[in-house]
Length: 503
Image 1 (cartoon, rainbow, N blue to C red):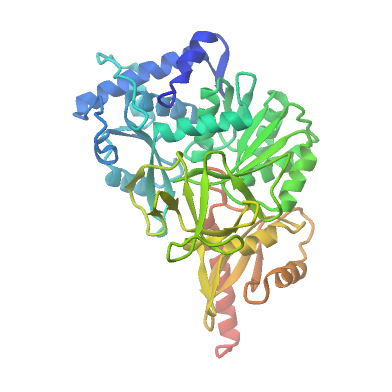
Image 2: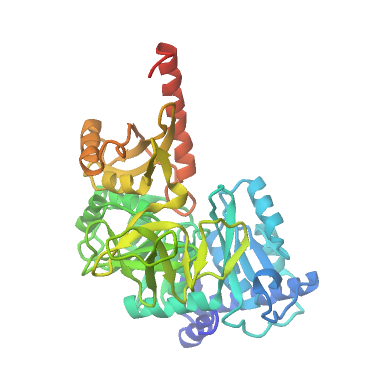
């Protein structure tokens, strides 16, 4: 298809009265969905024309000149329909996170200058208003259609923009690998401000599959939906899977129709995967490593999973290169910066950015470091922007987290650098135990010492009953880091009171 959303008209013509999209009690047939998207796209085009925005877009300098529409919508169903309508109108949908503060939303709007802002009230007025405009010509593959936002090295959002072609190429490659089609029912359990969930919903609709959206991430309710709604495919983050798998086991649910679980968003350990495989023995697991700017990079999938510690081999159509700091290719087994060349890469930033994102000879890097083995499996060492120095040692939290997640008593783990008077910073770990039983912190320390040595072993382990999550279902690392550092600060205050001259 030439643009994202083009296939929906085909499905509507072939199966007008078949269910296409559900969210809670609300349902859309293919015909109703296509009609609503087309009508809203026409209304958006009219509103943009009234604002003076140039439509139809002529294709010149899309990062600067193509009209933008900010979507400030907490209802996932409204957001998905508005997203597809804006794309069809030939504009760029800026997907704002409902979890952002009003101040952050305002800052992003100021940085991106949308011609139109659609919140719930504005969307309702637009959908019910009198429309005199006509629908523009189909968008071109190289036109932009989407800008998502991810935190840069400063913590401020950076807006990555994508062309229609970057997603339609991905749909084609994914179709070859997973054969998603009209026979499938896909569950998307997280907020659509997260690119994984948004992509999963749109990809499924493009393939003709029925899609169910979650109104909110409620693990127990979603586990029951998996069992009762004949879901065949699940798109989720590892964090969401851990929480849902607990509910599946607790309720003793059987999911014989769930054929495929597509996972991305963060790393997860061998213990977590083993627990999920035990709960869902008939389900194929497919794990992606990727980045917002790059889409899919590697695939680690059943029935031939990657070796322990690896994130898999290149996704179809993707080329990997490991380069040293001088830009030279390094041999298998040597660590360098991961560079990617593929048709799935982003078009650039509309706001923000960071020096960790670099182009070199057609390859793109976001600063991740790793190595390839002789068979082409990728292993990650960490990301430059999370690295910190402890007593002169470059320490990547991801390396320590991988060890912790491999332990049977750990459901989730995150590692941070805590201020230290003598070493600058030292690693400390946040742990979400796998069960309510008492966690043996000494065993965690021994395992880390054996695998990593003293310099990389966390100095302290902080146990939590729950981790804060982003709206996309990943661990909210900045929020969790604040919680850990607050505990560290309280500890240091007590120590200084007792031993003001502690070495």
